[in-house]
Image (cartoon, rainbow, N blue to C red):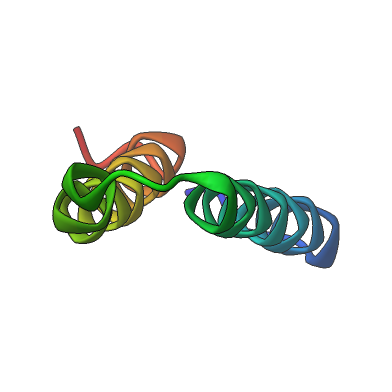
Length: 61
């Protein structure tokens, strides 16, 4: 069984922060109302994709 090390968790946390900052930056520059309606869906999709990547990394799929 594989275990997560601090290095793996550190890189995952850093990648999550970078993606979150990227989404916030795009939302800050966007002027379309449609973007603000779709933003929560994109954020949920990002979280779901990250969860799938973690589960795949732990070989649950």
